[in-house]
Amino acid sequence: MSGLPKGGSFLFGDTNPQDIFTPEDFSMEHNMIYRTAAGFVNDQVLTRMDDLEAKQEGLIRELLEAAGELGLNGADIAEEYGGLPMDKISTTIIAECMGRSGSFAMTQGGQTGIGSMPIVMFGTHEQKMKYLPGIASGEKVGAYALTEPGAGSDAMSAKTRAVLSEDGKYYILNGTKQFITNSAMGDIFIVYAKIDGDKFTAFIVDGDSPGLSTGAEEKKMGIKGSSTRSVILEDVKVPVENQLFEIGKGHVVAFNILNLGRYKLAANSVGNAKFALELSAAYANERKQFGVPIASFGLIKEKLAEMAMKIYAMESMVYRTGGLLENMMESLDLTGEDSGQVAAKGIEEYALECSMNKVFATEALGYAVDEGVQIHGGYGFSAEYTIERLYRDARIYRIFEGTNEINRTIIPVTLMRRAAKGDLPLQEAVQELKSKISADNPVREGVAGLVQAAKDIFLIAMGMSMEKYGKELPKHQEVVGKLANLAMQAFAMESAWLRGEKAAAKQGQSAAKLKLTMAAAYSYGTIGKMVCEAKEILAALTEGEELVNALITLERLAMYTPQNTVALRQEIAAAVSEAGKYVV
Image 1 (tube, rainbow, N blue to C red):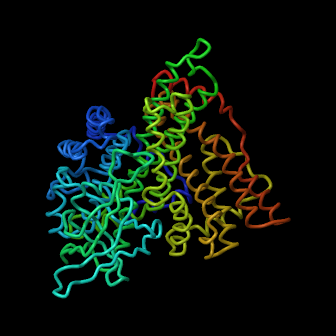
Image 2 (image 1 turned 30 degrees about the horizontal axis):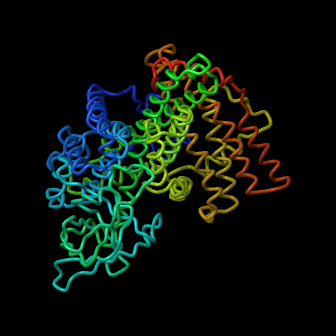
Image 3 (image 1 turned 120 degrees about the vertical axis):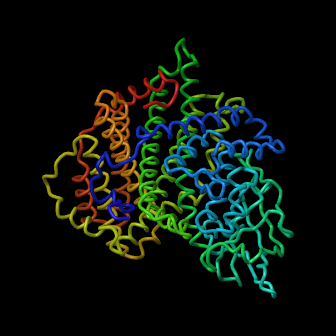
């Protein structure tokens, strides 16, 4: 890992724009994969969306097998086990393109992510040989059974039990899992249970095992085309060779898989949000009121621009993180039998970034589909228009793969833990910042200045929070959640700005103008909100004269000259309307 940036280190120094990966860096192969995945979704999934939503018998398997023939299911699976291994940018591209496919994105994501990656990363050679080829081809459907009726976010409180049979050949599983994607047609279930009631362990369970049954289909708000049921385990015999990884180490499997799952869900969100903007821009161009297209109205322009800016920020974050993950993979020795575990450990380095991507992207998607409905007006509330389905489908994104509340707590807590281990200079950065604060702090100029201001705002708020609460800070979730927002926005602003700067250095300011405008509009529109959120944190930590002094410090850190963001948004909206879709 020598030379690679540590997870969270972006907060403590400058990043060279040339060191990040952006969509403009796609290779010819990446572009080919994009065309293949997007073509599959547009031609084979979206054209059959009504049948998919009606749960037409056999359609999901047909689509999974079609995706398998194109290599879209095996991108994370070694060729030895039937896959078509690709780099992390390619798997991100596939996830983004699948984001347009509605409920099929959940089915295919369960297949290629949480439903198979536990075997990819933690399985034995024999387990991989037995199960992965079918998943890669789409002939076998994978599912992930972690959640229980009484244990949602608190996975470790699971009640499903596993007891070794008297002859030592089987584990006998009993329990119920809830909200399990792909459960109706699942051939392979990754199930978590406690051996003897206390050793949390992962198992591979065949879908046709006697005693395994599923409940009725959940009547869901959205993603209706995917199967979601409870899974009931009644004296299910699981061969001991199907125990996955080590006894009592199920949490290692679960949490490492969730890191990648969160990241891919963010990539799904990028594709889904682009689709929402495409539908909205097309409608705004066509719909006329008072004799002119509504795209010419200022408040519609503002919505289109804000959607585009958020998409630009989330896209920049996602592919920046993809570059970090790919560089990590390239730095590791993945030739041994434990290569999957080595890869999982490498991905864990960027767990904080994965959580930030998940929260930011899923909430940006929520904004995009909500404003998409608003732009459509009354028609947006009609099932005749696609935006209505996107609105319903998007809501689950903030709940999947660890709720956004859970992921928010992960961000500051991970920073604290890594700082305590000496991996990140959190305390040192806070002290250095305090020593620099003076009455003559310069006004922050340009987006670069705002990016540094954003980091400084987080550091001063984080430092005061740790001084106030120490190790008890994680218990104060209201403060922790706001700290997470500050860190996340700093990452979003910096990612957007770095991408624009990299493009300008390569193509020139003129060619990169829209990217730079996006970054500026987003940053100037966000920094004031960060100041307000930081004020709430400081007011929760202190009062009286101490609070006054803290607020003065905050104001010194965030002095900047506002820009005309109305004009910037108009420029962005004009580009979106002309293209009829997201464009940079």
